Image (tube, rainbow, N blue to C red; front, side):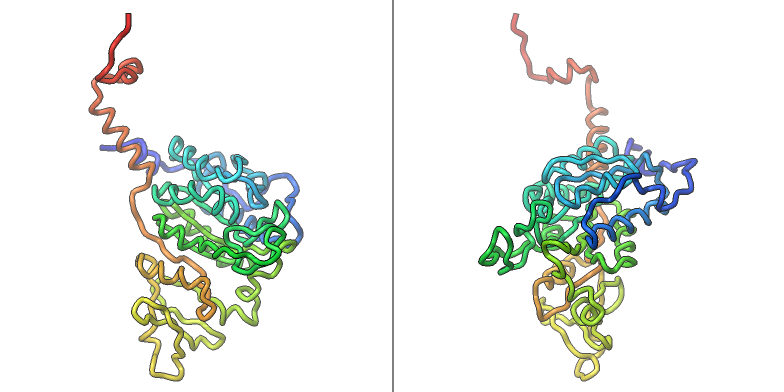
Amino acid sequence: MTTIIDNLVSQKYTEIPQYTPKDFKANIDVRWCAGCGGYSILNQVQRIMPDLGIPKEKIAFVSGIGCSSRFPYYMDVYGLHGIHGRALAIASGLKATRPDLSVWIATGDGDCMSIGGNHFIHACRRNVNINVIMFNNEIYSLTKGQFSPTSRFGQKTKSSPYGVIDNPFNPTSLALGSGASFVARGIDKDVSHMKYLFERAARHQGFSFVEIYTNCVIFNDGVFEDFSRKETKREKTITLEHGKPLIFGDKNNKGIILDGYVPKVVNIDEGPYSVNDIIVHNEKDTTLAFILSNMTYNDELPRPLGVIQAIEGPTYEELMEEQIEHARSKAKSTSIDDLLKGDDYWEIK
């Protein structure tokens, strides 16, 4: 059976203008603080848009509340600035009713992981075909520096003057555990890698989640410095590449092996280990994805950056449309009155 979804997915857009990144820049001033990582994210999103082959009127950005949520104003496409934590609910509804649209969400660690956490986990498990970019600066910036769900244990903020006593959320592990089919992590300072992640997310059929470590120069400056500074990043991070061994370090002489299911750093120059013993990254391996994501807060291990998981599966819109078509084929009547009455009703006269 050919469904509406099939027709929309297979539709070839015609007469698409030859866009440039400038075509996606709104004619207003960008009002983030000087030095905010948001500028870098915005620029890379605008750079990938011309290559997607999608008319501007078929693209929509949705946001909630927070510094990140200014994003729709800065994109010259359709946009909706929603309320706190509700961006994924709005975007899910939009995609369900207009599956032909390319729907994006710009959100922050507070907006997405706190008040929006419930919507996030259910959008993941439903595999709604939307793209989520989460600015993670590990702080509430718009409300002036309170700790967020990703703030680190012991961090002193305006709302935790003696240090945070909550363990932080690990967003990528939460996404994986909730059923997200595409999960990735980047950092605002590595623009070429970030552009690659956005391109991959855009072309993935299913729920895409990209966490971007985003520096807040005012309330949490330098929190990701170890992962971005030239002097430390090669020792503190590992770039995940599908089909390649997990090697890192200044001299590319360190690798990750598994001791059971526990990741462990070894030196491949000194023996007894060689490159043949190192884990080879596989984006389709869901167990490996959890292991890599859970390296996040272990100071003895490098921080994974890149595509953690990319698997395929039916999207929510496809399943919903199939169900609607099936219900239509079985319906005795398509009259609204008959549908509202159902098979079991009575009339009061």
